[in-house]
Each structure stands twice: as C-alpha cells, then as structure tokens.
Length: 637
Image (cartoon, rainbow, N blue to C red; front, side, top):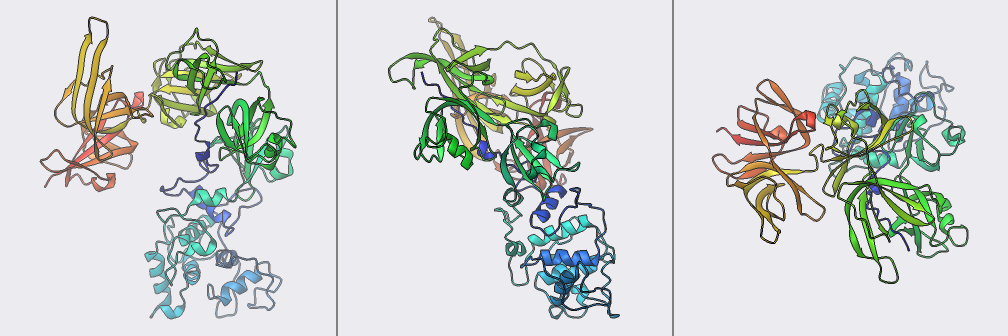
C-alpha cells in the first residue's frame, strides 16, 4: 500500500536570514545595519571577522567608504599624480582620496596636506554624504557647513549617531551614517539606496532580509570534517552560527545538515528540516525533473545534484522507494539522505484520527488514518491497514517505516513539571538544547515560539503534550497545549448565549452557543454545537479571546480580566504598583465616549493618560504564560 505524508510545512517562510537580521517593519538592530553595509561592500569586517565598532576612522578610510558608497561603487587604481604633500601616488588610499576630492565629497587643507591618518570628524563626514546626495557648495547660502548640517538633520542622517560636529567618528558611527544614507532623498528627489540596487520594503525601509539573502552562498551538505572544506576556510573564533533560524554553535552542526554561508558577513546558517515518504512522481518528467511528489506532497528540487538523483537517466531512485530528504532554506529539497530506510521516524501529537476508505489504494480498502503535527509545525497524514486502533486528539505518537510499511505507535511519556528558565537553559531537571524546537498548539492551529517566550513560565503535564530528549538528556522538542495564549484572537464579546441542557433521553448532549464579537475591528457572528465554554449569557460588551481552528470553528473561548491603567510603556502597562507585560500583538481599541462603539487604533496614540481613560485586559498570569491582550481607551473630554 502506498503511504502518504501530508506535509503542510511553511518551509519557504524559513528565510535563512531570520535570525541574522531585523524583521521587516521593525527597527533594524546594529547587527543588521552592520550586515547591510558589509553586504553593499561599503565597509568590510577585518580578517578576524569583527567590525571593530569602537575603532576610529581616518580621513583616508572614510574616502574609501565614500567611493564605495557612491553610485559607481568601484575600486579605483592608484592616483596618477600627487594631489597632496602627504599622499603619494603609492599610498594605499591614493585612488580613493583622488576620487573623493575631485567629486567634491572631501577637501584638503590650505597648507596642501590631506592628513590621511587624521580621524574623520562628523562635520567632515556630513560634507561627504551631502556630496553623495548631489549637493554642492552653491546650494547653500552663507555658511556652507551650517547648510550641510541642516540637511544632515532634516534627512535624519543623524539617527543612532550621538556625536558633536567636531568629534571623531568610529566604525560604528560610519555604519549608521551610511545606513541612514540609503533611505535619504537625493537633491533631485530619488531615494539614495536605489543607485546601489538596495532593495526596499513596502514601508520604504531597507529590505535587509532580501539584500543579505541574495549575498549568501549554498547549499552545502555537511559532511564529516565540513569545516576543513575550502568554502569554510574563512571561519574563525568570531564566526556566528545559526541553526534552524536560531543562534547556535558550530558544534551543533551534524552530518547531512544543509549549510549556507557568507564570507563577508562571517556567518554560517544550518538547517536540518527533513521529510520521509514514498517517491511517487516527478515533474515535468522523470528524465529532467524540476519537482517531485513524495507521499502526496510536491517539493521543488533545489540543486542540480538533487535533480540528477531523482532523474531516471542519472540517479538510482525508483518510483515507490521510501526516501528521506533534507530541505534547503526555501523549502526545496537540497539533499537525499537515504532510500528504503527503516530507521526514519516522525514523532508528534495527533490532530485527527479515524477510519475511512483509503484514498491511496487502487481498490476500496478500510484503513485507519492519523493526521499529526511535529514540533516544527509540520503536519503529516498517514494510512495504515490496521483498523483496530484509533488515536485520541493530542495523543503523542511515533511513526516509523518497517520493511516499506508504515507503523504507528502511541507513546507514553513520563510526567514532566517545572518552571522554564531561558537564562539557565533548563526545565524540569533537564537542560534545554540550544536549538530546541517549541510548538504551541490550539486545536489544529499552531505557532513556533522562542525559548525566551517561556522564561519563568510554569509548565506541567496539562501544558506539555510531547517532549523529546537527546542522548545528553537535553530537551530538543516540546509541543505545548495552548500554553502562551498567543494563538487566540482577542476582541470584544458583544453578546453570548450558551445552551447547556445536559443529555436528552437518548443520551444525546444538548450543548451549544451563539456569540457576537468584534475581532480585528469587524463584527462577527460565531457559533458552536456540541460544547460550551462556560461563558453563559453575556449582554454587555466584555473583552474576550477566542481560538479558531483552520476551518474557522471555535475550539476555545475565555473572558479577560480587567486592570485599570496608571501608566503606558512600549512593552508593558502599569496598574497601581504592578507592571503587566503586553502581548507583542496587543489589540488596542478606541471607545467612542459614552457609547459601546469601538475602533482599532495604535498603542502610542493612547499613551497620554491625561486625555484617555485606559483599561487593560489580560488572559492569565505571566507565570502561566499570560499577557495583557487588549487595551481600551476612552477619551476623557
């Protein structure tokens, strides 16, 4: 019988830069700004892979940066003439200095000296970037330096630079200056970074993810001694490693991991995302496949080597073989690990199980099917001929392949209880692996979460559906039962009517509920049959949270707890003498004064408590993973 894995993983969303750069729409970190400027080759790291952020920048070095940041971004040759007494034609920066001076970006001193070793001052640097933007001395009346300084401030070229005009600049200052330059408007109205082919997002910010991803090389399959390969000869004590999107160490990389790297950024990314199933088809043909179907799921083939492996002309894989494949950063297959393996296993918890007529056999056959999810958020669906067993929702299971057949086994895990510590990387007496995969699950909706989200949270057997440890007694995988509450949607419950009549004479339950809620600013009608959530009857607006599964059905609902707000911060609110953490996606409503009408607004717009009466609503205590989910602001006047 053919077996099938329905893998609904969003691997394409796992960009290799997720852990290396800031996310779109968020303020770029210093590390991100460093990477962008290095990727554009305006500056570079030293031989040890460090940016040396505190090191002073000389006038000669800044001349090189200006030329590199200019629209023709090239490496000039040596100067053919001696422009200054202290800059000979053989000077290592002579060509850069000549270009910077001839373009009016820098100037020498009246004595005929350039002073290449002198630290560049902010005032001199402002002259240079104003020149890049197309401004000349003729554009400023009176004091030219004052006019250039006004441009510097107006275009916000000073962001993240805290120096006076006369002070010298460090490499960190220069990174920030050129990063700010990318989004600045030129004299003729263009965005400066466009001349450097710098990508921008919808908000007009530097699209660092796209820029840096385009500079990354790979994939490379990790083999024994992978560090000795020439591609990784750049690695050193300062190299930064990531595994599955999280910061890690080189020792975490194992054989068959898929590697990407950037010598300029001095970074290595590794992934160990895999899938096991039956090789069912190739497209557009078996001779030159561009994609393959493995147990019902279609995967793009990422490399020429993998295309050959699945090709009928070059490879030895046959239709019907059980294969294990490794995914690259975009979700395509980057490597075939094995064929006909009996050691591959997939573990997780059940989302749905039952009996049905097989979807996979040529003739009608009754089978047991199990739809499950693993700790990476990948969904799988299997059929087995054994119809004597079904599996309960959220039950931990393990899938293995024995002699070409799929075997499903229920797992019995030891109880696990304790407080999660991100700082100590520990939980319930175990050490937590640096690349631990954590999934929060509500119904069949899930989200991967970072270990820091669980810091200080107490988890017990009711929260933990599945966990896995390695041979070092480190927790490597966790699947949680709606631990964080982040999977709920939060809004205002306008009305609720639940029916709870118990069982009728035939033993059928008479349960259900009808609800009217404002979610994401829109009023919605929701209903449930066969269960209730203890909401009862609601006739006045009540802040609440609701969990909806992938089909839009209600699988959970709860009302929220009120706290008056005495101060509003960026990540928390204060109520009397207690601080309450805000959810990352806290919902904020403006309530029309004296009326039960609500309009979506933003946190920073309601922070003035002299103007607004602000109320906070949270789902549960922070020790249980809770957060302030919703704020309502009503004008005082």
